[in-house]
Image (cartoon, rainbow, N blue to C red):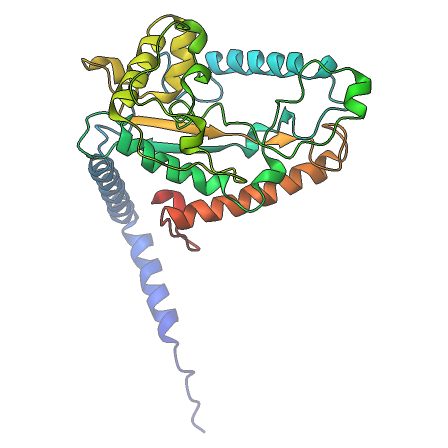
Length: 329
């Protein structure tokens, strides 16, 4: 009687060979693996640096400044957060989250903010704050302002000032949206007398070509008409913003939000990056206070913000897949 030996599996032979090699030459295998990992890490850093350079960045990390983009744990950011929180409480009637307030008259959680970062590309002007640059930034913000449900969650603090309880009880729910105050576009697309920072230079005459509301407002729409603003006006307004940022530490922190870290290394000053922070409001329609069914209110805002984010991805041609984040684009 002949006994047939079981056929040996090819995979078993391969794994057995690898195991023997690791056991017999463990030191060599360790250093070989370490060298491969090290080469991959170096290659990844080089590729990242080349990608940063192609985007106009001198390095991966910028030098720290008093007004540059700060991390949330920095002391100055925590202090600023406390000031903003106190101001929100002061501006709301009684400063009580349980008190009835007008629809969308208080700022929603910062986790729902949409921040747009704009980097300079050669458009014939050395400064990002140019007429051409503002047209492009205005168009990007219009993706948010023109979203289908933006009017249901936009911030509108204009009717929340100093009203009695009786007035609040009978107040007609607002249907408008206020101008986004932390928008770089709002710094320029505004009437001269109503511009941000006008209180520091109230006697300044309007520059040549200063726009009026009828130039950039669109009837029955939250979007702006992204007209190309007068070059002289844009230069004068940008110069005023740079001057305000240098006037004091407080104003440097306020207007530095819109400026790159190397702005004042140039003569005259110019910025290679700027940004807009677009905020939303609460309580939503159908709710009387900030805390009434808070989770449902936040879920409603999150749904709108998620849709807006998808619109921004499409507008900026940011592709995503299972292993590819759109933010890499």
